[in-house]
Amino acid sequence: MTPDQADYVLAQMSVCWPGKPLTVLEVNYWVSKLESYDFEDAHNALTKISDRAKFWPSWAEFKEFVDIEKRNNMPALERVPEAPPLSDEEFKQRIQECRDLLNHKRAGGDEDEV
Image 1 (cartoon, one colour):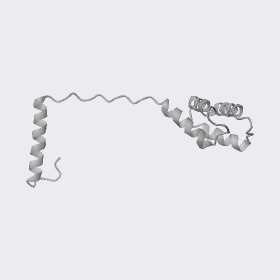
Image 2 (cartoon, one colour):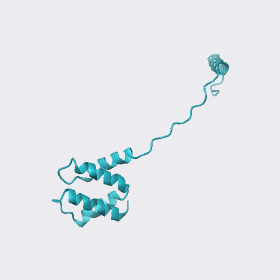
Image 3 (cartoon, one colour):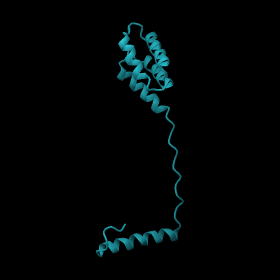
Image 4 (spheres, helix red, strand yellow):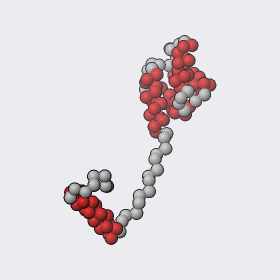
């Protein structure tokens, strides 16, 4: 988010909670925190928190709502394609290889083989 967008979010917050005068230090603090977030996430969070909070939220309270928006807007991971299942013959061969390896290790074979 740009500093202008962060200022816009703060202006909207001042409309939602008009009784809170902001000092220059508070504005700078909020702008620096907001800059690391997407404007849409912060704006959506503001819409939701303004319906619930009676007073100006702390940064931690506001951040909870922004993080929820960020998670909700994150695209879902694509499912990794699965390998085709083994044929019966391949399955039997793999099982036999595992049995042979176990029998070899039980008989005192090399520990490094896997």
